[in-house]
Image (cartoon, rainbow, N blue to C red; front, side, top):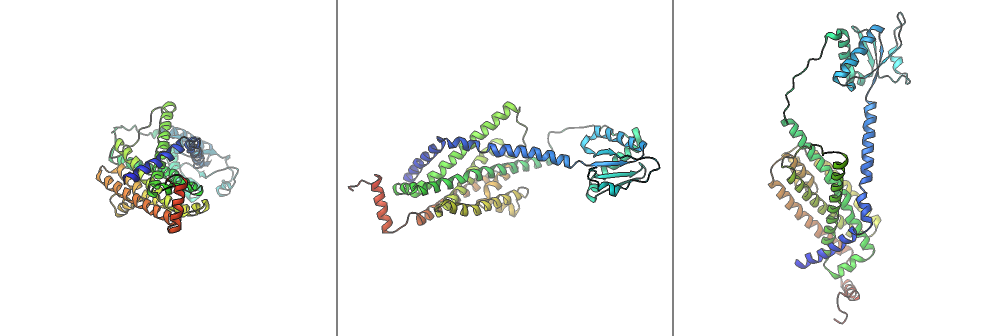
Length: 409
């Protein structure tokens, strides 16, 4: 066992240093920057578009006196309750004695861009529009009409306020949000980084390097070393991203915003987050090593890895669904199932103070990762390192060729 671990350390150090010292690692560190920029820009743009699209324009076809009163009420209440509380108002040209405005036909005029039309009078109003628009805005328009009818005699009373630090409802909601954010980050990092194990193995298989290593040291050591080398590389990348992000925010963005504190406190939560990331990475990485053992070409890798990635996405959705169902059988199933366990348990850590659950979960995840790695080694031996006398003879010749076994022995 000691020899296996020693050989795994040699392989892991070799792979880790080869990756860290390469120029490609710089581009790897810059990789998440581009989707982050695109995501932030798309979110801001989408929010702006949604905000503008959700704000309707109401056409007012009232007498001049009633229209002035309604506009004044809109300005006053908008100042007190927020301008976006009420829809925009557009005065429509009307004249005394003219025929009533045909609101249905007027709403179909695309150039006007109206959502609703208010006709009649303040004391006998008529609102025309789609069912959805009427259901959404009739309350706000009714408030404007009531204020316009009563004039300045209707005032919103000043409410005395008494502030507390936090309510139980807010605390529960905040901890659920913390658990969901941790789940998303855990899934994104695991999915983004675990695939590198697969690509590294396939590359060395195509170059016959993996067979040379297998002829020199136990295959368990090769797989174990590669897996932990990729984990160390992933942790290095995460550490760089977190350091740069926090430093940049502190320099250009001021202090960090107050975040909802998890039930077990931030130090333990970050510790468990790192452990669950490592466990999720090791389990998924071991699975990808098994896929790489069965695949001979990049095309086969893509064919085999796609179902695994989609299944992992379904597992993540399953874990997210159980965030608000603590203690229920479905949440317990998510915590027990190995691939969803890290996501379910990090959400539980945000909401529940109990710690022994995490020790049991991490132990089970370690055992499953070892089992998956052993299966991957067996698959590799069956698919690549062929058994039989021919395979043994070829292995001895390879050892002699690369100086592993003295030729005269």
